Amino acid sequence: MKLSTMFSSNCYSSAIAKNPFRPPSLNIRPASTFSPPHSHKLSSGHSVSFNRLLFRRNSTSSTTVSASASKSDGQSKGGESFLRDILKSMETVYLNRNPTAKSILELVHSVDDEQICYDHLAFRTFGVNGYGINSLASFFLDYGYTQKEELRFPAKKLKALWFSPPNSSSQDGGSGVNGPLPRVFISELLVDQLSPKTQEIIRKYTEKSGSGNKYAALASALGSLTWEKPLYSEFQQLAGESEYAAWTLVNGYALNHVTVSTHRLKSNLKNIKSLNQFIEKNGFKLNSEGGILKVSPDGLLLQSSTVADSIPFSFSDGIDASVPCSYIEFAERLVLPQYKNLPESEIKESHRRDGFEVGNADKIFESTSKEQLTRRA
Image 1 (cartoon, rainbow, N blue to C red):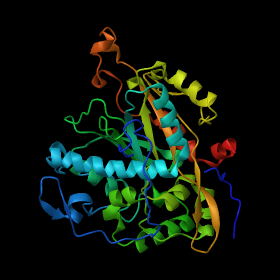
Image 2 (image 1 turned 30 degrees about the vertical axis):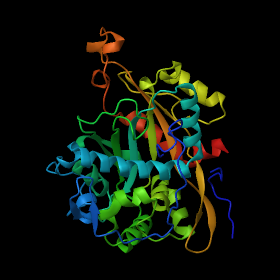
Image 3 (image 1 turned 90 degrees about the vertical axis):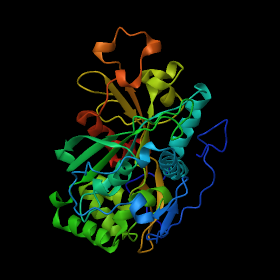
Image 4 (image 1 turned 180 degrees about the vertical axis):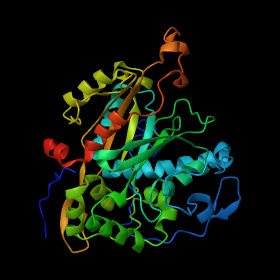
C-alpha cells in the first residue's frame, strides 16, 4: 500500500576517466543484516581478521574515542589503498541513491574540468548500545585519522566529533575520494535525552542488530542497515520528535553528505557565492535555514547545502513511503589573517581556516528536515 508522507517523493568509481562522478551500477543488498567474511587480503598480501582490520569492537558507548588506535596501516601504501577502496564504495552508494548530488557534481565538473576535492564526509549515528560515534570512528582512526574537537547541539540533542586525515595523504589531480583525503564529521544522537517511547524504538533495533556496530564502515560501504527494517508507525514516532532519529533509523550508517571544497576549484565557482547562484540557476534548491550562506563568527568558514533527496522505502509492515535520503554541501575555507599576504600560488590548505562551527553545522543539519523538504516539493 502506498502512502504519501511528510517527505517529497523526489527522490565512482574512476572507471569513466572523463567524468569521475558517474558511478557504475551497483547492486545494493536490501537485507538488513549480513555476515561479513572472516578475513580480508590487504595489497601487502597479509591476511588479517576482518573484524580486527575494519571494525574494532568498542567496549563502551562513550563518544570519547581512544587515541591509542594504530595509525601505521593508514600511513602505508597498502593501508591507504584499502581505505580509499572503502570510501569509494561509500561514495558509490551515496551517488546511486542521491541524483541531486550526482547531477551537481557532473554540472560543476562540466565547468571546472580539473579537480573536485571533498572537504569532508559526514555520518549520523545513534548514541546507544555502542552504535554511536565510536562505532564508525574506530575505522578511520585505524587508518591514520586524528580525533579533533567535539561540538555540541543541545536543542537537537546531538554531539559530534571531527577527524583530520593522515598528513601523508595527498593525491594531486584526483577527484572526490581519489583526491586529497577529506576530513570526517561524525555526529551522534543523545538517545537518553529522548522520550521513553522513542528510546524504546531505537533500543529495540540496535539491540536486535547484535554486533552490527562492529561493522559500521562495512554497512556504509554496502548501503545496508545493520538492523531490521522498522514499522512505518515507528518511523513516524521518531520523525515527530527528532527528524535526525527518523533519518538514521532508515538510512543507518550511509553517508549523510559529502562536501565540495569550493576554494580548491579553478574556475569562478571557487567563490561559494558564485557557486550557489550557479546551482540555483540550474534549478536546484538550497537549504534556506538561517540564509542560503552560513558564515562562521570569524567570517572564515562559509557553507551551504542542497535540500536532501527522498527515496522510496518499504517498511516491515508492507507500507511503502518516501523518506529523506542525503544531500550535498559546499564549503569555502578562507585564508587565516596571519597568512593573508602570502602569494596565492603559495597558499596551502594548512593556511586556511580549519575545523567546524556549531552555528553553521546546526543549520546544515536542517537539509533533511520536513520544512526544507516541503520547500523543495
